[in-house]
Image (cartoon, rainbow, N blue to C red; front, top):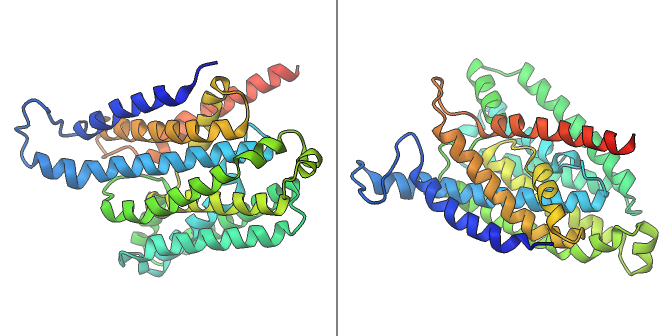
Length: 320
């Protein structure tokens, strides 16, 4: 069994400088004669790269933690309803016209994520049942999706409708240091919370009854999952829209290189998630599309959907 962390760190060290040079305007590091090269690097590409690393790390960690908590390799952070809740908050900022204020969009998204977290904790109750927790998350996701569809259908202006649809596709285009300062503290706090749940997640792989006998408090673990995934996913949605499949793909790719314990998968998933989002964003940036830049959420969906199908077929084959 190999340890993926050193290799992932090396790959990130190579990918970050390359991401700063790549784009519609390529910058030659040995002959930086491009007009406004430093402005492009410092004000445009560096915050975008940092944001991709931060959000990818959060989504990767959230996916690994959620799969460990639900003991389901097909689990994705969006299943908890926190991402749809955050998206609903952002949609309402567009619908009311307040998104024109710089603070409103991330604030509404974070309020939506917090509301979904509170509702999830309220419905799941004190028992800490994983099954009830999952069903509550699915109900919240369905409700938030219905409310978003209603808001889209009742959009007050064509401009608001266009902004809502475009934002929901997910992207890092035109993001600045402001978005980094919003997302980074929340995401890092969420990752720390999920790392604190690592040993309890290991015990949970033996079953809920055994985990209780080993001293795991189901309510505390449930609270850590709600807060950790709420912060990581909510922060991502607040600044970049809905970006899916990172939390599904990354743990699957890394699980064979660990001992199978959820706690050993969290840090590698954070590094690999950062790598995946950074590379995907660079690909979106350099693809020659006539209509502009490919949206990051669409690109990852085009990658994630076949990956998900392959997992389902492999699981069906294993059960046959």
